[in-house]
Image (tube, rainbow, N blue to C red; front, side, top):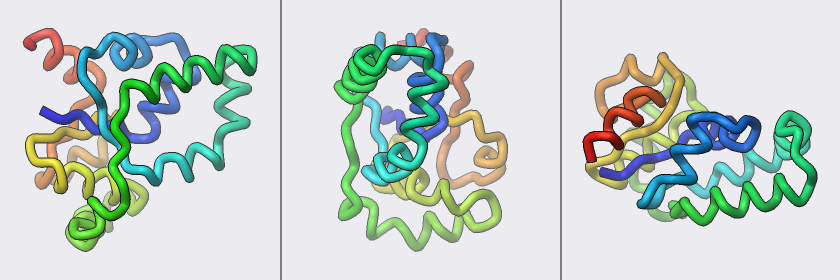
Length: 139
């Protein structure tokens, strides 16, 4: 199964030494996320750095470690699924459309997110951190 990180999961791992960070760093496989996440990260990078409490080098090293655990999904892969993803996300959060498109493009995928609204749709599976932990423990 493919696990797609939503931006808040990635940001959480950068900010706090938490279960989320440990799961990402200890996972044997790779996570997926759309290349768009870098645009979103660019808008929040100063805030993420400040909230992390890390030195610049520590923050950069952590980001590098996390990115080694990720496969970036290019926009060209998501484009054929964008229309369906927008239709799914329109009543939830339009900003989640690319994560939904990523799940549609990669069959047998789940989106790792703490967004309860995402769970109201039925086209893609959404796992919160507790459900990710259970899934990984069963592997």
